[in-house]
Length: 281
Image (cartoon, rainbow, N blue to C red):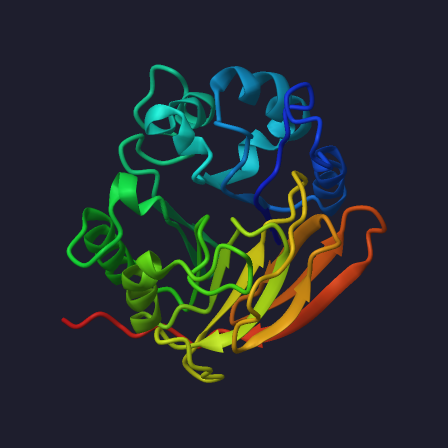
């Protein structure tokens, strides 16, 4: 089982105006005991400085370091090159580590029959468009890992009803995932929970070939109002801090969005993997 959330840790002495419920979320992660913790960006506010990762993030989430699989958000890149983020997760003298290569911030790994792809959606810093290094890497990675089930995650959501709106710059990477029959896409950035129906790359619903996506910006910093409600939005909640817990079975998955205060499931469901197309030989 994996747990996922983004938009997490406040520096209370600096961000006194925010709700700062990340400790509640960390305690929930403890109780869920996931095999992997996917941190969906904007992990340490305001600018991802190393000193705040050490003084604020580490006391809450540092104990999960061995299972943490993060992606950077835009607030991490408020520090040049997301240096604090990479220094914390990879080590100050390391170019690569659990956060992926310092110059890229994207990487992949396997959990059972699932292939997981951690993408860097800070497109102005690393490139996401057609022909970009990240697109070329993603297509090559997917061709090398023809496992049955595929989950991807990034900070900026391709589709959302949140105030930031759809991340159109993620369309190229979404297209590559869709062509490989990806099953799930997780993101943060908008500070709420949203589940969207499986969609094609153009945003139209497709229960057979579409990618089911979630926005899980509920890691503790604060909640925000929704903007224009997007077509194919199925469930929305901007009152509950918590994590998305996803059980990854050999040919299927199930999810629960768990309230960090009550420990109750606010949303739940199941799905089956589509199966991956085999690379041409």
